[in-house]
Image (tube, rainbow, N blue to C red):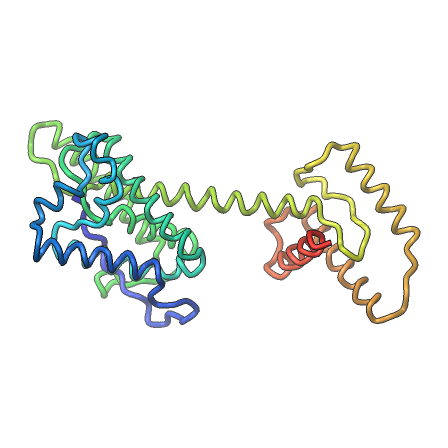
Length: 312
């Protein structure tokens, strides 16, 4: 089974920039509580784990257990630990990503736990939400690494430090458990490698999402003319979507249009000139230092110009 997640507590100075309990987190916690209630009142844990817990020997017949195992827990404290960690780290992610993307991400992390559990040929069943929770914590640490939490409600620790420490802990004890099992002794019932799988799935997911977003920005910059200003030359260090000769044609046409343009002294014209100068400055900065050097305000300028171009 998966081990309980740690008990970090929110920082005292936490802001209210995002809801404390978002719909996706609330739904996941609610489903887990309902399943635990059924375990304690109608169906015993052994039967519930047998029906919905993941076991490699039951594949491919019970394929759905690759997801359903995340909602079955070995005991009340196992449930409380995982759900509390989800409550601490989940809402801020969901607030930024949205309901659907967050829930999908959570399930992907759970599947990552299954993949690593199968990869290391671990015997026995797999239950618990720890792989998904470890993924959520990893994604949180990647985006807000310096946020502070309290481990066991006592020890202050940065989220990045907590994630790294738990990763090392699970790796060490995972390999130790594999060695003990191979030697014939009783192996631990904690799914250390499932935790690692959830964290790695989260790392890959966030990195891929970030890379895709930056590629979209680069493409917009490479083809960005101002709605009121002739297009500028494309910065040399950015990827070009057209062949070199086509780019040269665009630059030549831009210069020709600029030569024909008649400046006016009206306030509207002055505002257009100001926007054009601002865009030129941003493009020059990208050309010299790369798009990563832009501030948030400069990125807004690019987005605004891109929207104007699309609308036109």
